Image 1 (cartoon, helix red, strand yellow):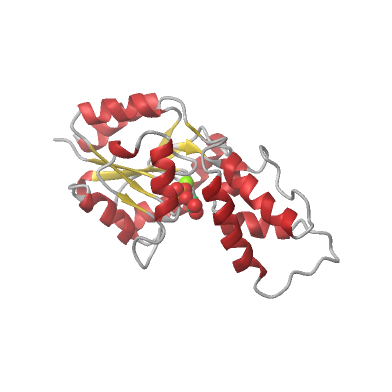
Image 2: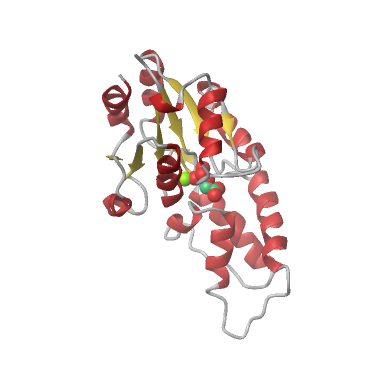
Length: 224
Ligand SMILES: O=C(O)COP(=O)(O)O
Ligand SMILES: [Mg+2]
């Protein structure tokens, strides 16, 4: 019997770090701070989301630089504008994603997305990457009043795609994903091809995913 495979987006299906970091750096430049984040070395920060990037950059400002009140909210809005205007310039699917999605679908599994990216941006990116139609549903950060690690977006992603939570698992890349799966009572496979490599095992996922080629066998193990 088949089941449902739930995918995180940033850092899991696609390396979005280049475009995310470019959007954050545009905000810092607008404040005369220059590029505070490094387009390659800061991928791990990018995968923790827009506000995480802004806070990391602010932490690197010269000691005498003071931000006006409300700067983070203002910059976050600016970041989303920049990002939406250049969402798939550097962004690429990780190796083997499309083959793995083909094989999972051929094995009868339902595929769905649960991301903490705002829904409109996630929709746009999945379309740009040519994979939106592979997924039965897509729940973003603002689709529901709550976001991951609350289990409800996960549950909605499974149920809107026609699946059952008890026969599902999450593929993700961060502690947020680890906590979401635990809250939903399902296993998580964390990718070990990201910036943290195998050190991601510190989060004690039920499995590490070293390459998308390994996912169909894992799905058979866990869901059949
Ligand atoms: O934008 C974020 O906060 C992270 O997005 P993700 O949940 O797809 O990794
Ligand atoms: Mg992620």
